[in-house]
Length: 320
Picture 1 (spheres, rainbow, N blue to C red):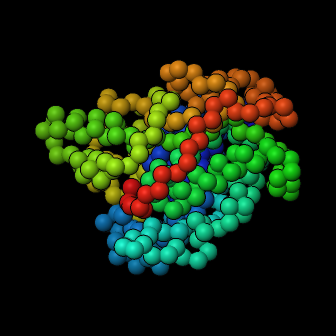
Picture 2: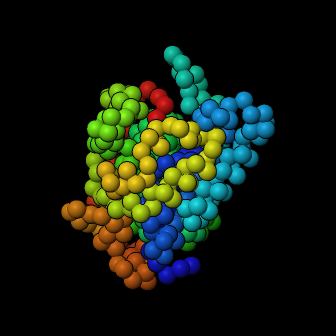
Picture 3: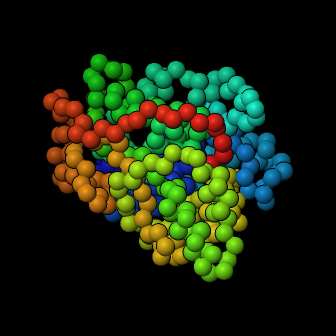
């Protein structure tokens, strides 16, 4: 393994890794850091969101394999490693009242089962930093919420020598971040930039739709505008899930770099202090990998010095 600090991003479905924090991952890959994407489900129940592919019989016949092929292409574009946890997409329940989730889906799996799978991936890759979603899933999709729950449980269990003994040697990730890539401030900036240019903005509807959602804090801004074109290409690789004429592409990568050149994160739990104005997910960690590894395997590491994990605010599941 390359001698550089390691980053793991835990996501619910194929395409989430490209829409959330992907320019940051591409930057770290370019700088020599091993980056692992963990994809919890196969995205089997995802809708076809690209109007050009709706009704395509081949895609409809074998959507799971299509989504795996899309993920392989996105993985190559980003330069990351990637592993599947192998759970089944829960789908996004719609209706009033909401229907029951399908039997055997990820969101209904016992937390011990899902945690073991992620602990195994953590102990094998040995990340110093993990990113995932907040307690509300970023948006209230049951798989995103489950992804948060399992990531938090695995972050806590991975270093416990009595937990999942057969899943590898204990390893304590040192920092846990929540992705904050869709902040209201960012969307307002994009919206106003389009209006200033006399162009129609798709963000007005986006902002109205999310007006009542809790706005998570931001502790960390990673400058990664150089990699916005990589992010765009990774998104387009998920052709069934991404409309090439949709909101993601209302502004060019160059325009986005001018308006908002960073990706944002929230440090939820950490064994090193949070630095004011933090601009690096590895901030505060030893730059020497051996020293960071020693921290992650220490039996006397103590309690986290940053612990901002909050209880979930229950919301009705909606598209996001």
